[in-house]
Each structure stands twice: as C-alpha cells, then as structure tokens.
Image: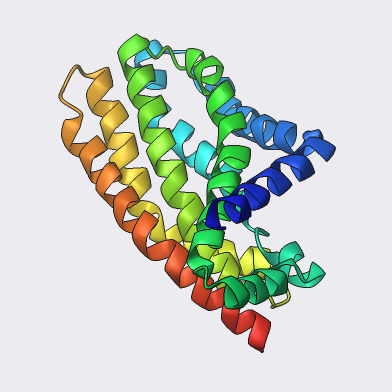
Length: 228
C-alpha cells in the first residue's frame, strides 16, 4: 500500500511540471543570468574568474533552487491535497513523513535538475577544468538536496501564512550557509589540485542528517497547518 501512494505523489508532481514546462526553464535561466553577470562585469582574467567561480556558481544555483521551492506546500495546502494525505495516512497507518519524503524527492528533481543540466555550460565561462567541474557537480547535487529538504521544513511551517515564500527564504538562507561554505571550498580545492574528500564528506553527512530529520519535521508542520 505504501509504494502505490509514494508513486502517485511522485507522478503527480511530474505531471504538473509537464503541464508547466516554462517553470523549469525559468529556474535554469535564472541560474544562467545570475552566474553570467559576474564574468561580464569583471576584467577577463582567467585566474580571477577561476577564483570567483565556486562561490558565484554555488550561490546562483542555491538561489535558483530556493526560488523554485519556496512555495512548495502552499498550493497543496490551499487545494486540500495535504488534507487528503493526512486522511490517507490515518486510514492506512502510513507515516505522513514518507509521503512528505516522496514530495521532497520529486521537488529536488524538478528544481535541481534544470540547474545541474546547465551548470557545465555556465562553468565554461569561468574556465573550470574537468576535475573542478566534476567536483562542482557532485557538490551541487548534494547541496541542492540539503537545500530542498530544509526548504521543505520551512515551507511546511509557513505554508498557511501570507508571504510564505519570503518567510521561507529568510528562514532557509542562514541554515544553508554551511552547505555553501563546504561546497565552495571543495571546488576551490579542486581548482588548486588539493584533496576534496573532507568537504564532500561533510556535505554527505549533512544530507544524511537532513534525510532523516527533515521529512519528520515537515510532516509535523503540515499536520499542524491542517489542524489549525
């Protein structure tokens, strides 16, 4: 009974995204525009561009994913979809956190994949080599997953409030600062030919903790929003 529910949630999100393909294109375009402004506004010195690349690409990618995820549960709460989740979980004994986890997984794919798809092209503007680019992609995959999970908690807590998207951004940005720091440091070390295992391991540890904690916390927030 659990797997059909999870698959239905996942497929619903994909069906909605297919009806609005411009949203995914807008997220990727936002990332490209924000990242491209820095090379255009600086002196075209390769060393300077490679020095700035990790921080610029990381901040632009996380902002694009955050903009795509800030209203994650707002429409679901308004339409009564989350109420159906709660009723289904009460009838079947399925933990609400599992349904939330499926929703977060779909959100990561829909929000992060367009950004990750164009990231290699944007990185060419900064002169990143093959190894730094591979580290950038790995760190962004881990970091955007952490961002979506944390954003899910904030969106669940603020889902029933006015101006929820802005409130979510204010809550999430300080919390994802460690991910930005470790991800940018990993790319910096890759550019200099240094080891990057420690930074990627820390990002992986953050993701492991978020995978356990965030669906549970988001489920509590959604249940409170439904009952209020």
